[in-house]
Length: 409
Image (cartoon, rainbow, N blue to C red; front, side):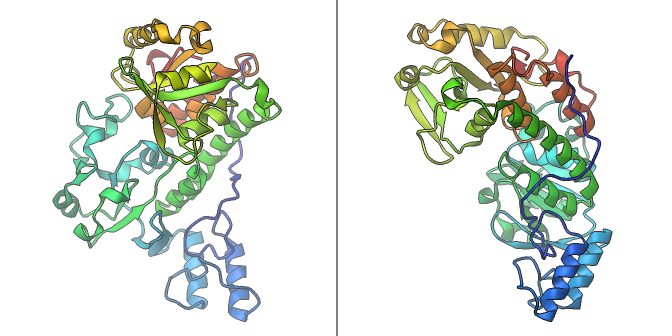
């Protein structure tokens, strides 16, 4: 019997601090407990916290209680969000339009998951220019119409277009490439979504877009699956875990890339129950190594991410991906590597699974199925993937007919 993971409640499972002014008690949500805490702060019975000053005017008073009540009721005039650059950004509410200065897919997928994607009016060219590394007719069809403007390259933003669009807010996950002074009349929020912050960031977006209950529902679904994976793998001794190598695919190169132990690619492999080949490398970066480095460590499983010419929601023929895997298997220097001997070479779509797919969750469940087919025999990775695409990405795509992972788990 195949287990399809479903969610019935909307109780968020999170211990992260919601980084929005008004979250006085520093938990994961703004509610009546924050009003109670503010009353104690005003009376001198509790310490002021980072987000106690709900209206950010330098004083804790009744006005802050009023602001929190408005946030709870969903009728605040503005919302002050603490972003990735440690800025307190005041956003006019309600947000009816936004531009996404986007890098990976995580942010837009999160906004789409909570039902606010219909408010987008501009996005970087990588999503809407044919040949762009996030372009997809099947996965991002709503972006490919005249209502969504091209705001330029990630590192060469067309600020004139953004100013003419006059959005309520600009969202960026690449703040280092955005010049805030060029759009002085628009709130700019630097808020990435990734495998380490996805739950709290999703809740911030829930508040920004007035979609708090939708964010809770999405995170309940996410957390339920995440917990299932963790429960199944928690008792596996490190010595019994397969050694996993993860990298971008380039069959012709003599150099290989190894993400360090805290890189999201490494985290995905470890969350799936793998022993990661790059754990000896500290940080979140990626290090170039030669083939001998990989061969000496003898990985049991090798997972490559490939461009959307090989895998993706627009790819329905497995010719390119099977040829890519076959080419790698024929490389003589890797003949004695366990992953090659046992043909445990897998590929995932770089834009839509590695740098997308519920902040690594979809990729992680496929990894787990590949690493432990017997242990995860009761979980249908493709069914979970389909639920994500249908229920939370609101798309009419049959994932079994497109090839975003190979071989299918």
